[in-house]
Length: 182
Image 1 (cartoon, rainbow, N blue to C red):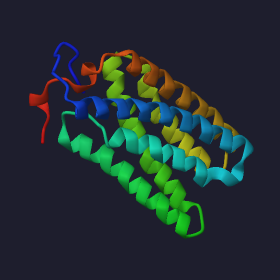
Image 2 (tube, rainbow, N blue to C red; image 1 turned 180 degrees about the vertical axis):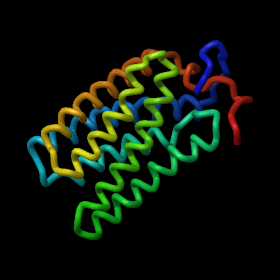
Image 3 (tube, helix red, strand yellow; image 1 turned 90 degrees about the vertical axis):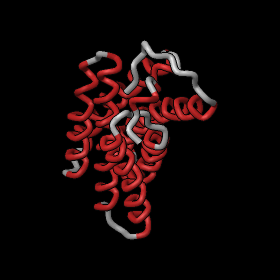
């Protein structure tokens, strides 16, 4: 998480990763809403909705700017592991692999929402981990209408967070280079 009072000179790769992270936030919010609609209308498209979720998670995880390397590693590894499990779930039949990958994506999205709640001083973003975890359990127990409601709220909050993030100058995402643990 960055300090907005410090304005580092950003290289092209810095600008690219910040832009990819912000695009990933938009894609993730849209994916949560798509997953909500899938829960209501298209029960056969669960794995396909997860592909959009995977894209958003990977865009964010691959371009993550968090000072603490342990937290950064957990959030990035959860996304990569989720993509691996999701790809395996396409090879084998059954939904448990897809459910597991969704849970791993939720770890990433929850961590990012929690991080961004401090950036924006918005305590409502701290509800996202609870809403997303609730959505996961509701999906597992086939309570589709309730899962859709929870996912719609989650997607709306995530899109609000993305909108707020996009309005910020790029250097707000990066902060002080000397604070990053390598």
